[in-house]
Image 1 (cartoon, helix red, strand yellow):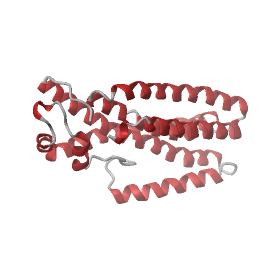
Image 2 (cartoon, rainbow, N blue to C red):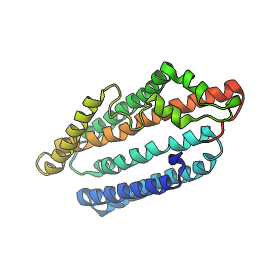
Image 3 (tube, rainbow, N blue to C red):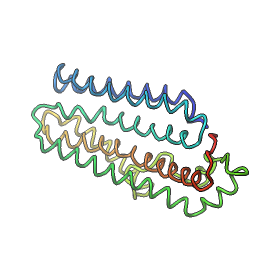
Image 4 (tube, rainbow, N blue to C red):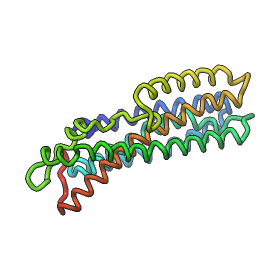
Length: 240
């Protein structure tokens, strides 16, 4: 599968570099060099940990479908880290009440959990429609190999997920425009209405980070299904 390519890790590295540099620059501008360096240390540790996990799983993913999906499930965290690079500078922003920062953090956690369970539910719902029939058509004798990628495309399992779980395509499209507009408003009102601007900037970043959790939840749904098949058939399914 294309997502097993080492290029995926390179793309992840570049995206994380953009997030790190952007977050450092934002923190430096709004809170000074000391705060920017603190952000840099924290974020670099996060980035290196994620990349090391991806490198380890990349090797294992070439041998077994289970690890292939685990490897793929790490990339939503790359996307989440990208948005966190723009969100975390708020923690160092002077003149912003703690209640604003806590509100954004709680909002982000709640939406992330909602999307996470929504992603799992989305996979289970789509599998229940015709997953078992597709499994019979796309597996070889003994279930040692399965055309899993083809099955996921046929099932319509969301590759790009939903900004907010439960919203239809039109609503998610409209929400993305609203969130972008909110970020622009927050960026331009920082000196006039600092607390409002942080909310206008932080909430869309939190939704962006939470969006990754829908994809991760869907990946976890796949992982649990593959493990269920392996346990039932007492086999290890080979990677595609």
